[in-house]
Image (tube, rainbow, N blue to C red; front, side, top):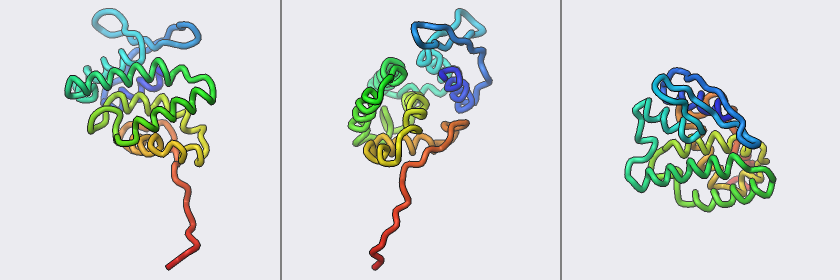
Length: 174
């Protein structure tokens, strides 16, 4: 999955495809990128940050020092929390936490999209896709954020668009 995400990120950033492989680490696969200069890079967040720098779009890593730290925090959250969700209870707890965090925010860090938004969107896509409309409505802030990010130009690519709002039929017409 991580290799697909990195390939999608490359397209989003306007980069040509890199040479990826993966290695087993415990029960998961760690993506690897062989660069032209130097040793290979390992890990989703490390490679994604490298791609952003390579595309000269460092603003996706945050502008201020605080924003950069928040982006790094969410990249760590993606790899240490979202990528390790194993039970329905873990998923509910994580979505509840994210829902609270996003209550008064449009993006994960700052006032515009960052790498944190992109990678968390990719990580949550299969989880959100499995939710019913009612479950999506119970995490209204996550749903609002997710819907916004999936419609951001170049982000969704090969992933199916997810539906969040039921069509409501009003019986009381005035």
